[in-house]
Length: 326
Image (cartoon, rainbow, N blue to C red; front, side, top):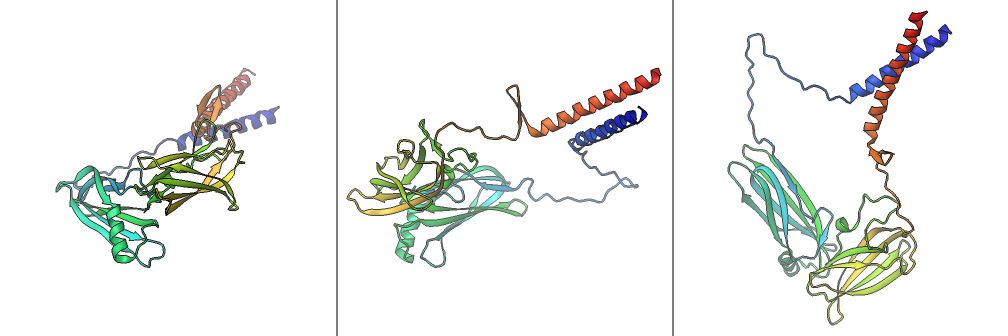
């Protein structure tokens, strides 16, 4: 009986220490502070160059994206920036090297500017210049790299850059593919029937868009035409459910034709994951559901540890009380 009591007390004590360790680890550490020297003075001088110098290229057109708009305005978010420098470099498959098509310095504020600056880029003008002077092909996608550098008031610099494609027809993977979608769900926008919806951009010279859907083996599983929308953006619905296309990974090719039927350009989107609509799965959020409530995993572990500590302390108290009565 005595050994049993010792084992219970030992286990309870160990559990208490473990629980207190978990709780202690979740408490933020106190901020460090400096005490004055014995003489009461500290020889420290601080020169603030820029308090929160930062830069971020924002907007829907991001790294790895694509567009068919002739002119775009790229939002650049800056903090404590005096001067904004930018450079645009162009490349195209089949053309060696790269070409600078735009560069400059924009004086924002002598005291530092914090906010958003919309940088206009005349992509069609850059294309025409490259076609006329460097042998670029207007029917092929041109890759542009925008580099933005923010210069601080007292010195220092921060930089951000994006690379995107520009062509007569384009499909932006960033706006079409949802990389966060669970494996048991279609990773694109879908309609009520579960059919994927793909957003395709095209220039004014394109009148008709022909879409070809291929499986991973390269076999054509569906193809069809859509008329170009006057806005330049077509949300094309792929009738997978109607045609009984099985779950799997697919790619689409969008081909742009003129009003006279001339082939003008094409774009491809890979990585489409289609899941037949036989009941959508529920994504795993990493939490615990109790009575319809979603509890984060970290909160659940800490709460469990606290409860375990209380139960352990209660057990120790009862055993001690029983021993005292004897």
